[in-house]
Image 1: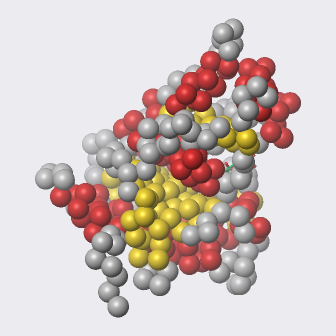
Image 2: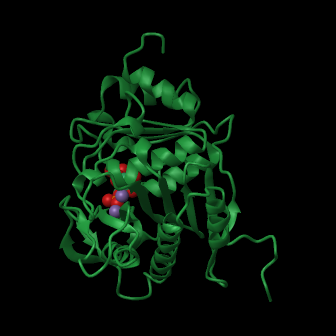
Length: 334
Ligand code: AHG
Ligand code: MN
Ligand code: MN
């Protein structure tokens, strides 16, 4: 039976969107299409992770000295193989690779750079909590034919696209190309991502929910401690923290609220990585009417210095992000 005619697949949606830009070459559309395919392949493995011996540690460590789970390695390989041969990409960068990932000489290079966290929240794999994939797309700016580090170290406001896959109760793909945020839900019976959340906007009034790992309370600055004490006290906020960035951001996008990963005495730059975690999330949240800050100013304005640099993050409903900035600045009025 053919799907209902009003059902829009991601392929159809990408083509419709491309038609709005006469100068579009289709390369960009193809990259998004390739990422969507990679997300389906990763989703299939995530869904059966409990059934095959893919759980547990691969016995490797990544560039951050963190235990690498087998699914991280698998997801990293799937994204690389989906993008390395297409001729659209100048170079890649991954959370799992110390340096930029060049396109093999045997393949042509293209005009775009893709940075990704192949599997986010991997500490949650073994306990069946939602995990995700995050990606960011820039245009190459260096003069050479193949991408170099400079092409990866671009500020978030220059991103052409950003998105994530969420392997949760259903598998979703959410992305923006700067023309709003659109969500697609995977129909496993069709193997297709179907448009389920066109034009996502952070709700206003937002849910009064704050999201932070309070285990680090004693490491926080006085301003951070005062902020959270107010939120849970006078502010009357509820708390939700999944510990999986994609899931925490997705909830904030759908309901509103304030997601935080603050700097602290142990993590002076915070824990979350700028280029392939926070810059893409900041573009998405901003496109949906929200804000993303490093606690002092717009996260999208940060000029990256290194591939794996970290940043504190406050993102979600604009009013809540601004309140956080005021507490952190020691504003006597709050
Ligand atoms: P990754 O699995 O890619 O290393 O990312 C994990 C991140 C992110 O998913 C989440 O927001 C954060 O780690 C949770 O950190 P804490 O356990 O310190 O709260
Ligand atoms: Mn991550
Ligand atoms: Mn990861």
